[in-house]
Image 1: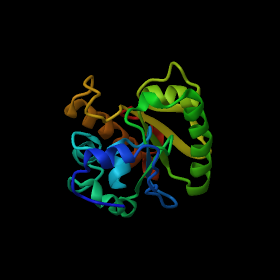
Image 2 (image 1 turned 45 degrees about the horizontal axis):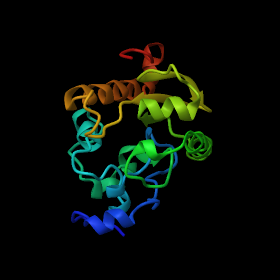
Image 3 (image 1 turned 30 degrees about the vertical axis):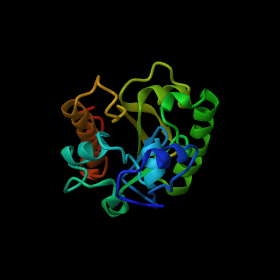
Image 4 (image 1 turned 135 degrees about the vertical axis):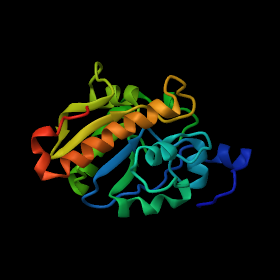
Length: 198
C-alpha cells in the first residue's frame, strides 16, 4: 500500500520479497531500470523511495524533470516520456542479496518488456548488476554498443546514497549525458551527431 510517512522497522522487515508495479507506458523516451527495490520502496510501494537515494534529484538536476519530484509523484513520469522498472522485481535489504541467476533471468524478462513497450532508450542504473545480467563483464558507464531490438541501451551509476564513489554532482552529470543523447536521438536533424557528448 502506498504511503508517504516513514515506514516503521516492522513494516520494513515485512517488505522482504514484496514487488511494486512498474511505471511504464508504450513509446517512452527513457525506461529507467533499477537493480531491484529496497525494503523502503517495498514498504511504501514507490520506486527509489529511500531518503538519501539520489535518483530523483539526478533526474531534476539533469533536466529530465521540470522540478524535483517526490517518489510519490512517480506516476507523473510517463507524461514526461519516462518510466521505471527493475531487473529483479523482489525487494531485498541489499542488492548483493540477489543471485547471478536472478539477474540473468531479470535480463530475459526485461527484454520482453522492452519488446512490448518499445522505449527509445533503456537506462540501467547500476553497472555491476548490468555486467552480470547482460553478460558484459567489461561494460562501462555510458552508451552501450548493443541494442534491445530498436531500443538504445545506456548504463548509469547506481544512485544509492551508499554509492559514495559518485557525488550528487558527478551522478547528475552522467544523467545529463544521457539526456543529451536522448534529445539528439529525438531530433532527426541531428542524425549524424547521435553519439555526440557520449
